[in-house]
Length: 229
Image (cartoon, rainbow, N blue to C red):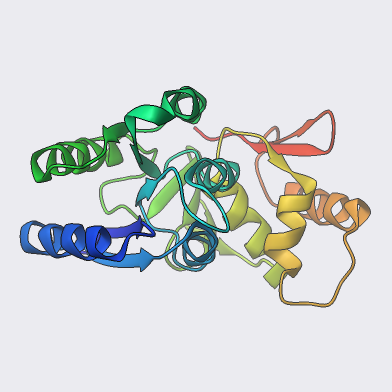
């Protein structure tokens, strides 16, 4: 079975190393570490970890911006935020991003373990079947998460590379609004291509033809939402 991937973002190196060592001693995780929010964001986009533990105050990109970016891509990543007593105002903003747990610093191992345990328990609430690899778009339409394959009545549906990337991004953010720009970045990130909402609109139109009716909603302001079963 695939290991759960955890991203730990903390700019204080001794704290980060100590907590990662502790987590490795208790859980069979694949743990990624980041020294600031920007590095964490790049690791998140590349690896799509199931759990993110982040400090609020970090250089380059703080934990709130990191959480905000993650929520644009995924409604289901479990986010744990570490905060100081003096950062209560920031914490209120974090609560709007559906975090699993917040931990007041300095973090005890008991509190860290408690937060991670809650995150693990809530992972099972994702709309994924028992082998943690299938997302049901309707009763007979399945997106295979690992292989990036669309199945209708158990038959594979051919997708172009851009269609597959767009659908994967929408599946990672199912039932929440995703901006046209975010889709563009995820599909054409490696190309020297200027942003075009028309390119995204055309791509979504092609993708709709291969999905159940009503699967992708247009939202005013240049947003799209994938509806699942």
